[in-house]
Length: 124
Image (cartoon, rainbow, N blue to C red; front, side):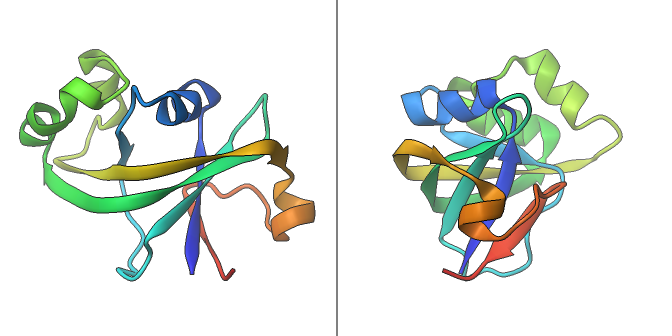
């Protein structure tokens, strides 16, 4: 089982060029057996561009989470705190190994899924 995450194209690209090693989430999937994330680059790309293995999921108060992840966050501190506005804790998925597809895939045709608001499970 894998999970599909909708990620803005600018951040999705940073994951695959190695400058973003953490993907931040306000809420996380409950299935702790998930080891792979399928990356759906949201609008305007609207394609599945690759996947990555999960090293671990970090869950902390925002100040601690930022301190632990800032050097490979791929985002600014302002963006981080705006994203987590009104939240006391956050999640960071630590990216272990990436695999960018040679050709982007269609979420509907290739995975039989619609773009998830936060995430969707995918049985491969």
